[in-house]
Every structure is written in C-alpha cells, then in structure tokens.
Image (cartoon, rainbow, N blue to C red):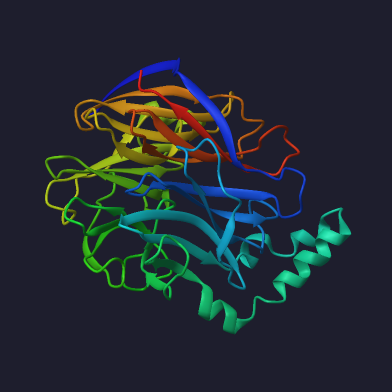
Length: 377
C-alpha cells in the first residue's frame, strides 16, 4: 500500500520561456521533453509549429540551451511528415548522440469535418489543403510510433525506426547503457491492444525486444491506461507510473471525477522489466508522469494539474516509491487546462529544470514551451 501525503505548498522557483508565438497561426507547441547532454547542453523537443491541440500540421522541433535553460535557440524542425507528428521525447546517449521519439497519427477520425465549421475561412482552407496530403499511401508510410538517432547532437538524423509502443517522453537510458521503453501499445499487432509494456534495446534504438507487460488493476480495462514513464533506482528496481482515466467503480476514493479522470497509478519491477506488480491507483488529480532520480536520492515526479488553479506540480519520494508527498506547486497561473506534460533534468547545483507547455498569457493564446527552475523543498 503506497502512503500518500499532500503537501499543497509552493516551491522556490523561477520561470521563463523556451519558445512562444501566442498569436501566430503556427504558434502552438505541446508535449515536450528535456534532456541534458554530458557537456551540460540542454535539449528540448516538442510537437511544434502547430495550429492547435489537434490539427493536421504537427512537426517535431528541437531547441538547445547552453546556459542551464536561461536562453534557448530558435526551434529547428527535425520531423515533418505529411500527417500530424505528435509527442516528442529525447534521450542523450553519451557523447554527441541523441535519440528522439514521437508518434504520427491520422487525425481525420478525431476531427472529421468539424474544422469546416471554424469561423476563420482562411484557416479552414489551410486545414483543407493539409488534409489533402492524407492519402492512403501517406498514412501507410507515416502512421506509427517512431524513434530516430542522431550521431552529432541533432545536426543529422538516421532513418526512423518503428516501435510497437509509445509514451510522451519516450524511452530512458539504463545504467547498463541499454534503452528501456516503457510505453503503451500503439499501431502494432505484436502486442495486445492497449497494453503497457517494457521493451529493451541494446543497439541505441535500432531493434527492440519485449521484456514484459503490466497486469491491470482488478476490474479495469486497457483503455483506462495511457502515457507511462519509468525510472531506474540505484538497486536496479524500476518504478513505473501510468496515466489513468475514468476509473469509476474501482475505489470509493476515486469516485470524484476530478480524481478518476486524470490521475496516475504505480507499478514496480524487480527483474529488469520482465514482470511487474499490479498497478496501484494514486487517488489524487494530476498526470501524465515524468520521473527523475535526483542526486540526493529523491525520486521526483512532475505532472500537469488540470483543475483550477491550473498549472504544473510535483511529487517526491524519499523511499523509492513506497510513499509520496504530492502537490508541490511549481506554478499555478495557467489560463486554462490546456497545459502540462512536464519533464525534468537536474542541473549541476542540484536545482531542477522542468519544461512543459502552457498558454503564456491568456486563454486566447497559442500554447508555448515554458520552463521552471526549482529547488527541492
């Protein structure tokens, strides 16, 4: 039984912007991940230069910071398929090597012809032209979950590799040097529909081998589980957290819609990902997770908070996930619920840099990429 304690307190923090064009047609950015290279360079990737939360234009973009996140380069496009390229993860592999993950989707089933009703007719025309690229051939070629390797810090990229799972922040690098991808089955017939699985790569993402899958909480369905992330503890134990939705009827504590619609559950593996404990729901609002093992030994999870006051929050465990103190408030000034997917790296002084997407000013803004530098309480 995981012990939970609510902190509900602000942390010492400062904030800034990576990239924002709040009034531009292609100003929307979302679903970002940050990585730190051996020389201290910070790398941020996201789905950017979009027109909205769901649109036909998504591209994978990359930005760099050489001063611990205070300033950032302008975004550069590294993926731009004919379809919508979404959710970007990044993993430094040592030296100048990087691995980026994302998925590409056919959003026509989601949007239908509803875009034709948008009041801005020029916007309708641009969406219509974009959807003209959604041919059967383009869908067959582009739809999927992908990773892509760069040998030179993102200057050049090798061909993309299809992966049978996806997670917003992609795989992690284990202490052994292997990659572990803890994700949800996506666009693959090799795994059961909707399952959360662990895959390992020993060749920097070129090939992947299934290790194991996560058993569900009694009475739930695969459709309740989404967008996982995982961390490796010093003793090799793996702590996995998973976004859960609509888990009514499971536990009286979860019946409040604010808890069951956007929460997390935890699972543990002691054998490198081959077997996992049944998921244990965490009865508080906030998701999806990103985990960071801090040099102090603390396990830090950041997550979006989509109830008022909207913003980004964190939970901290000092006992390897046996207990958590949650709702440390990184910021609570989001104009609305379209925000989140934070991820973190530790800086040399022990502070944490967390990046995420959020509207920089008003509800009418396009979402931008923002950062918060904060210190453990």
